[in-house]
Image (cartoon, rainbow, N blue to C red; front, side):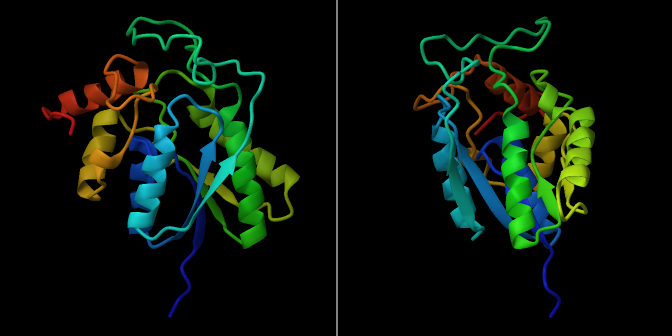
Amino acid sequence: MLKKPKAIILFSGGLDSATTLYYVLSKGYDCHALIFDYGQRHNKEIRSAVAMAKSVKVPYQIIKIKLPWKGSVLLDKKIKVPKYKKSRKGIPPTYVPARNTIFLSFATSYAEAVGAQTILYGANAIDYSGYPDCRPAFVKAFQNVIKAGTKNNKIKVRAPLIKLTKAQIIKLAMELKVPLDKTWSCYEGGKKPCGVCDSCRLREKGYSALNLSDL
């Protein structure tokens, strides 16, 4: 029996990362999830990530880190999460400074330690808030970091959803039977999604494009 290739996935419990997880599993990978507790106001996503990882029997680790310098409304509950604005220019205040650089660095270390050849995360550069660490240029740059700074420089970092619209991601998720009702996208940590933050509105946009209602 052939041994499954091993992959490390950054797993937040949101729509994009859940779809990425199910996509990777459908390709026959032995997937290991890294879930980050970094002081985010929407830490409800951690519970969603853990529940989904358990449901598909994917081993996971919760990595707890501190970013005491804050620099994002997601790290400072004293600042109100802004409502979605279609015409907004620049990077929104929900951006967490170098978050994916930090997360992928942990994943790279993990991959080297356990012999994984692939790192995946659910970055998207079509229907997104404009975060610089979700763009193809960043993925390419981080691949160069791995190549230059690791012993196992053949590890590949992949973002399979990066060129898909939110509607295409939702359609793929449905095909893969992702439990979309178990995912958490909202930047607020309330009992129900706020419906007005960037993440909620972009998710709603995807469902609307498919003439569907969110669960």
